[in-house]
Image 1 (tube, helix red, strand yellow):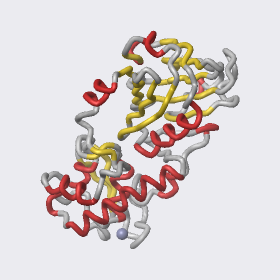
Image 2 (cartoon, protein in one colour):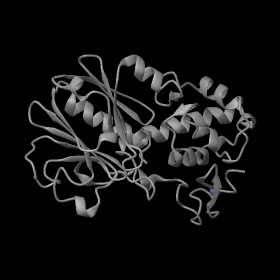
Image 3 (tube, helix red, strand yellow):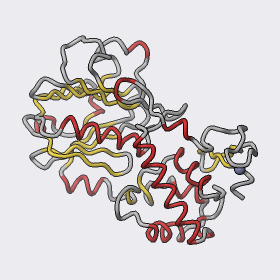
Length: 292
Ligand SMILES: [Zn+2]
């Protein structure tokens, strides 16, 4: 599943390519992939993009918002010049879960659920092999309502160290589990939780309320730092975090993983083998020596 940095990379791309474009058609190839009245988006200009956590919004001139969630296998493919049946790779930018081999030849293909066409002929394909992802049309009130249970986006200016410390102080759950709780912090995923804890030298099983203010400051700092670095690197690609970006290449951040998916490999600081445990059902990686 894409995490915050990957979704932010998609948002930056769409921001560059879609602002000012007018939607001329929406083809719905899988009913469940789209919620709302598709007529309401026709002839609407795209005015801005935004994001909270892993949810991406495209704002329209009539103040309606298209909310995208890629979930496990969602993919956004943008084709600036489109002719039906054209080879999928030509001039096309792809984000999200890699296209299965059999689907690589043309667009639309059997994973295509939605096709947005713009008045200049360019197209945006929403592909989703397993159909968990979706696009929903909302008014701004409906959007606020649907996102009211999401915590602060960790790249928002309101995500301060003070806010972070307060949030982790009121629970005894293991810090790793709390970091992944989207109702507290929107957008921290498994990769980044593991690595930020390693860099802060905090054991992932530590009860959250036992973390000192000093350690909380470090953790807050590293969370923001690795997210920001990952966005610059174009997001990450890992075994359970299938993600590729324009031109089909993979994000580069995986080469910087500190502990994530490195079980048994030497710690980058002290050479102790990295340990893997399961916390709240998620693979958790840490150095037993550095993160006591
Ligand atoms: Zn170590």
